[in-house]
Image 1 (cartoon, rainbow, N blue to C red):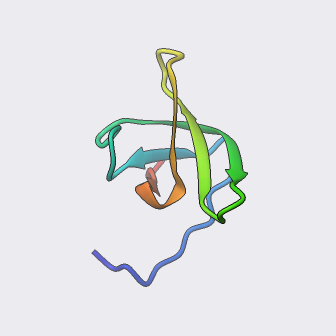
Image 2 (tube, rainbow, N blue to C red):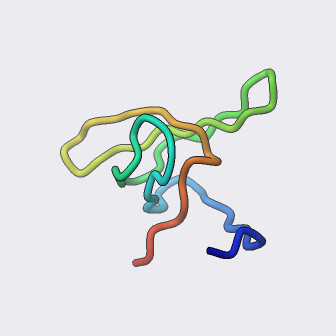
Length: 64
């Protein structure tokens, strides 16, 4: 895996969670926030309408 690539994710993009509690799940990004400490968090909405929050560093863009 090439870690030098940077993909800018935005609302409406599909993503795959590759680390953390929700590893293996995928969905559509619906909210992007930056915390006071500088960590970027996103809300991912699955096809079943279930939402969860995770860190941006834990996701990659899903191929369309």
